[in-house]
Amino acid sequence: MSLWTCETCGAQFPASERPPASCPICEDERQFVNWKGQTFLTREALAESHRMICRDDLGLTGLALEPSFAIGQRALLVPLADGCVMWDCVPLATPEAIAQVRSLGGLQAIAISHPHYYGALADWSEAFGGIPVFLHADDRQWVTRPHASIVHWTGDSHRISDDVVLLRSGGHFAGATMLHWRQGADGRGALLTGDIAQVTMDRRFVSFMYSYPNYMPLNATAVRRIAGVVEPFAFDRIYGAWWGRNIAAGAKAAFAASVARYLAAIA
Image 1: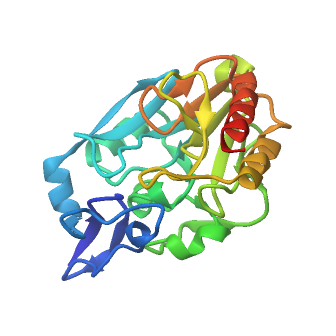
Image 2: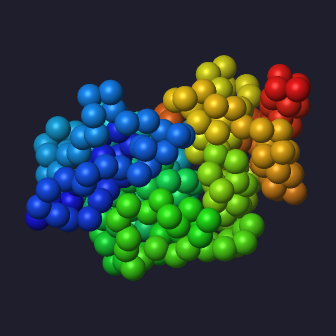
């Protein structure tokens, strides 16, 4: 039996003889079903057609599939004293990528912003001895491959270390999460947002959507909540969901200006 990966969102499904009948993440209104119909690849087929690349992205090591696959996000490795936290996940864990991560100190935990980036979380956890995978409990229903390593945390924050805390912002999903890294940006603080707060193409602002592919904006109440969640934290840098989609400096002021601009636009 094979593990299956959705070609449209990159979520991995349990081993079976036949592919799943559907992908609930893609059938949700925030995502979409491939125009040619719901399709899945075995883990082996995905490994044959794609490779994992590992490179620097504004001082953090990132990992992604090449050529781009599904949503195309990259994972980031946030350094701790005794390893790394993998922020967000990718749909494939190859021996070469695992070896590269080991050479950087290995993984102590995985934390994921929302269901569109769950990817091959179980494979990555198993590769490092069953390390915890922190997902917010409000998004429990979207897990496509249940695994013993998943920790469904509750509440509005969860501290992984003295320097790393997860923040439930909501918005894109009920359990949508951002990561604050106190030592990021040379001690000025960094916020890893995935696309909960999406870094715009000019890399001067962020924006907010309920659904990106279906152009459904987020409401004002949700955006104000996100702003309130991050306000107590110092950060000078924002890391978005894709290569280079970062705000390198002045990020806290940019975030506040982005909220004001967005609320004015939808008023």
